[in-house]
Length: 474
Image (cartoon, rainbow, N blue to C red; front, side):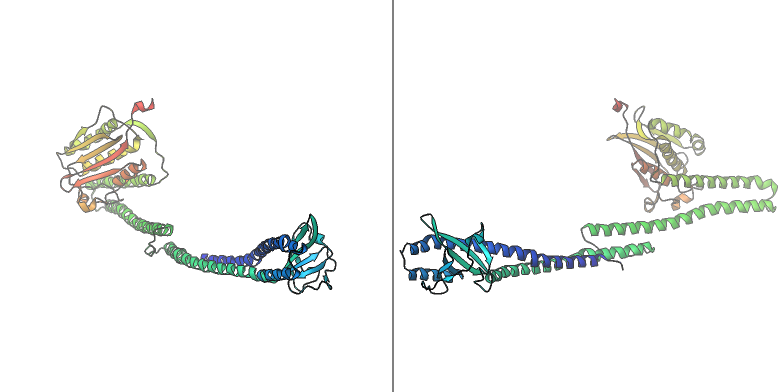
């Protein structure tokens, strides 16, 4: 049987109760009784010394009569709830607070020896079998002229001490009961604030395991449990989005591969069965070549994006001149720009501008952004590339004056395979992965990329890189 946290807490509560009862009923009972004994013995010893040094000496010195002595002893007996004896050194009881003294027929304590007390002034027992129940007996010597003439004994039943000790123990039991009630309340609070929320979290986790990512976690507390629930909800939303993205990804890949493959298959079959005459085959072979290149580019982009999407991807960080990299990349587009009559305007800060980054990947970012700008620029237009330095960051801007991006598409352009409705007419050869690759590379560098676009006016992409000063190495 699986032990739940609630069962563990309940067992701990019961264990606490049992241990608490055992401790109080044994240890506290013993220690409280010992304390009461010592406290009572100390008080009785003070009284015995007072009697021995005052009343007894006055009696032995004939300053007071036997009747006066007995009267005072009886008063103290009532006050102390204890018997008071005056015993001579031979063990004869001269005065007993419980009875009148008969000097002609004194009661003797058989086997009396004061040395039985040892180095203590009190002992417990029946005092030489003179009592039916155990007593705590305290003595004080009566000394006259440095000579011991007798002893004052005070006897008090232990049962009275037990009664007092049990009263203290009852208070301890009441305290323990209050602790049990407080612990029970605490257990209830723990159940409602921890156990039940954990059960909800566990149920939600099981639902997510089974694929139901829409199951709600109804916990809204501002503590660790609430944070866990919020994290779990966020994870479920991300997994749900990831699953949707995966379905969309497969759908898009299937569509982007199926279209050119269908076209290639159709043209090849038409050429083989003679539908397309030999004199027209060159035209359709060029179409097949175009579609093949698109498939090749799509495959490379997928492989590249998969590599960049890996969080463990390694960057070859070096120091290089971003201005020079931009100039070299722009030159690769001279042919297509001449065809479309598109020119470049480079606004570069300084002769050289060094950054710390992966040169090949940043070159690919610049290439993809320029390629994207050319695709959506009108003929006889200008693409502006600018570098600026601000707060030890280099900002690279690629700006075109093309068709722009619709406002509702700005947040989607980074998604894989996404193409806006306006771009579909112009981007015949695009894969919809270029900007995804750009964002992955920039994020791998722990930098940012933003886009500003107005439909029908143009688009500007701006990304940041860490600035590097050569003299910093000195």
